[in-house]
Length: 114
Ligand code: HEC
Image (cartoon, rainbow, N blue to C red; front, side, top):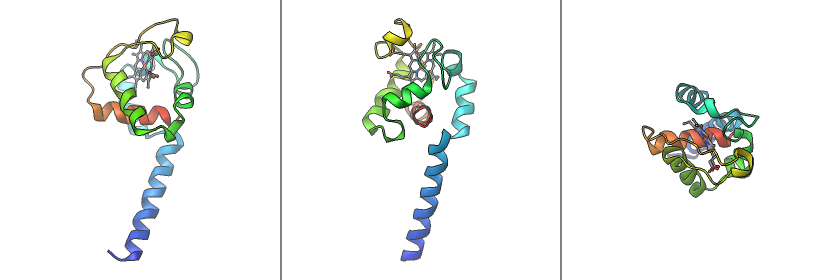
């Protein structure tokens, strides 16, 4: 691979990540809309679950460490409470066992981009 290709690939990757960091991948949002995420979550205010903007803030947005992303994806699949009891009064997130780790990871990345 010559330097020009490497540079071009770098520019493409950078611009792709800019798009996905702006407000998250819209395709992921539509998958979330078909699931039940927005029944309990809104982007900017507390519903049953915390606002996605608050989740992003707590975990440092798109700069969240990979290990955090894995833990949050597991939380979506397995459900549970404990991290937001002050905001939710202890309500749990229901489990989503039909989601794969990869799907849940995409959703976490979308949430962290809010
Ligand atoms: C029945 C309501 C409900 C549904 C449906 C729901 N959530 Fe949640 N969610 C919650 C609650 C409540 C919390 C706070 C849990 C806690 O206190 O640890 C939460 C927390 C989260 C968190 C932060 C977890 C943490 O430990 O900080 C993420 C990310 C999240 N939800 C994403 C999703 C996604 C994506 C979906 C759809 C697949 C979804 N939620 C569906 C209620 C819900």
